[in-house]
Length: 187
Image 1: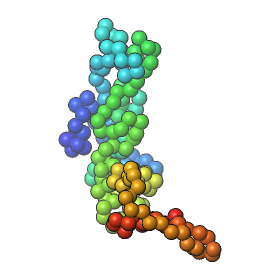
Image 2: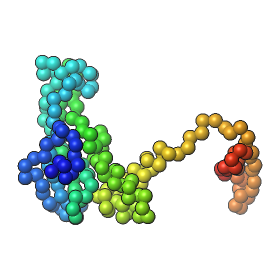
Image 3: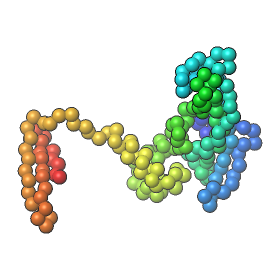
Image 4: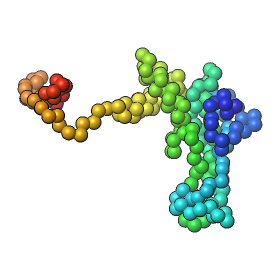
């Protein structure tokens, strides 16, 4: 089952008879139950080493993680994440996994699927339907990725030309042009 879902985290175990098909937001969806647990080497809050049960298991917290569609149904992973408690700092923290970002419920594979589908000529709504996420989430994923490729200029060009002119109904505009390559911007 882990191979089918492409879950490579060794700390996740799929529970027996864990697949259920039930309605979610008005449509049939596939839910798979799993558990994430391990023994931490140290406290993530204060950094103290886990010796003599300084950090111990303290219940679980279930997260519904959106996975890429498996078959014809939207697929979700109901992941019971182990909670830990540290005696040294009286703080608790939750087990981490490599399939999803911390404090996030959309898997890395689903994010990748959104980005791959965004390269095709598809609307945000179609991508959202195919990936079982909202259109806002699709836009946020695309925008976040696009920001990585925006040019960031640390300095002004060597040769800079600029001009101001009247624009629509008497408003003024400002244009500057890089004198070396002709790239311009208007404000």
